[in-house]
Amino acid sequence: MKAIYQRRSIRKFTKDPIENTLLMECIKAGMNAPSAGNQMPWEFIVIDQRELLNAIMNIHPHSAMLSTATVAVLIGGDLSKETRQGYWMQDCAACTQNILLAATSLGLATVWLGVYPRQDRVEGLRKLFHLPEHIIPFSLVPIGHAAEEKAPNDKFFPERIHRNGW
Ligand SMILES: Cc1cc2nc3c(=O)[nH]c(=O)nc-3n(C[C@H](O)[C@H](O)[C@H](O)COP(=O)(O)O)c2cc1C
Image 1 (cartoon, rainbow, N blue to C red):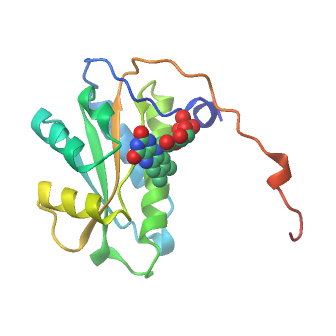
Image 2 (image 1 turned 60 degrees about the vertical axis):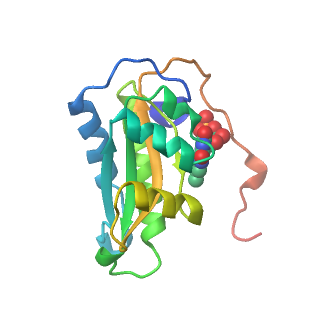
């Protein structure tokens, strides 16, 4: 519960790199997400080369925070692993959220950058990372140490809860 409410989108990172073991913890949490029929249609690219992080900023219009990030994870959907057609993006969303929550609970900062279904971002990232056709870039998550503070979330709207029908 603490991680759910404390997680905020952080867009300023310190220069301190994160330990690889923590990064792997986050990705491991992503791989433990639920998926349709347990198809686990995800693949990950760890990006820690400055030139590549800079290149993403030319492709993704809302990714300026990468200028301060030391690492980002690209979550991709693998269509060749699909056994339940049409669910891969929901699976990848659950995976992405697990990564955000795991990072928060480890004291790290993240922000979810949407890629799919924006075709210009999908094609730009496909080219940059030489992705084969069956891998669809879904989201990008910079992970680092926060250089800004944000208050915990409070977004409860009880009027949106309907009981036994609309
Ligand atoms: C599907 C999705 C796409 C998003 N894309 C971006 C993005 O491209 N750039 C960005 O800075 N934040 C992006 N965000 C983060 C949202 O802006 C953020 O979650 C929202 O403003 C709520 O703030 P919070 O995460 O601090 O609660 C995205 C979030 C989601 C779930």
